[in-house]
Length: 172
Image (cartoon, one colour):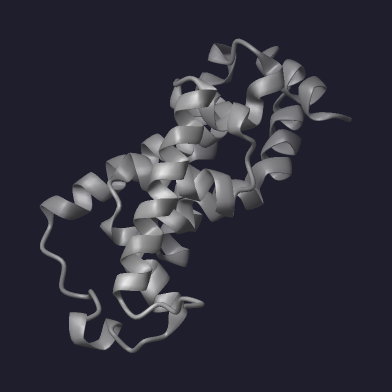
């Protein structure tokens, strides 16, 4: 059964179709949650919470074709709420800054991503880690496709500047 049909049946109250729909998108939702929350446990919990929220609100899904977009938007909102809560609580398990500067490319990239404002980080996450199309991102973010493209371009330039300024390698 294809995604649209599963979404349509879910909207009509078919719980089995909803389970199949969630099964279809759980990996993508987990990756999105992990990218935001940086914890396997928190990402699993996020998928569970988003599944419950989506089940309660499935009748609000207006266009079954955009079920993945709708689920991703719920996940992003949930993760942002969790990050806001975490900022209000004292954090003691963060990696000390001196440890993070080992020169490892992955650590530099993670550090560069942390410097981005949330909207820019979200665009990078959706485009390059979730392999979403510009049109899907525009739908999720509720902004025009051209705006997505220009913001991605600006964000990528900012990341390049940060990485090359932090010991990244150029071909010069």
